[in-house]
Length: 173
Image (spheres, rainbow, N blue to C red):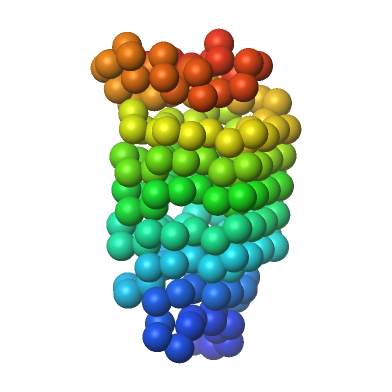
C-alpha cells in the first residue's frame, strides 16, 4: 500500500474548495467532494497533472483563475448549477480541447478560456446571455462553437454575442 499526503484544503464549513495539489489526484482525476458548492479562486492553479475534474451539479460558483495553467486538462463539462464562468477561469490550459457547458450558465467571463491554444470545440447552452471580451483570445484552433438548440433565433442571439472572428464558427447542435 502506497501512502500519500493529501493537500486538499476546504473552508471551515467544507463548502468551498480552496486548494488542490497534484498529490490529491488519482490517475490525473479529481472528484469534487460532496457538499462543496464553490471552487475557490486559483483552487487548481498549476495542477499540471490534472487531466479530468468531475464537478457535481451542486457546485454553483467557480472562482477566478480556478484552473490557471492546468496544462494537462483536456476536457471539461461545466454543470448546470454554474451560472457564470468567471474571469480567466481556464487561462493557459494548453491541453484543453473540448468544453461542454450545460444549461444554466448565463455568462462566459473575460478571458475565461484565454490561451487554451488546443481548444477546438465548445458547446454552449441556448440560454447564454453574455460572452465577455477576450473569452476565447488565443484559442487559435477553435473551429466549432456549437449551441445546444433547435431554435434559429437562439442561434442568432449566441452568434451576436461572439467577437467577429468567431461568428462563422457557430453551429446548431
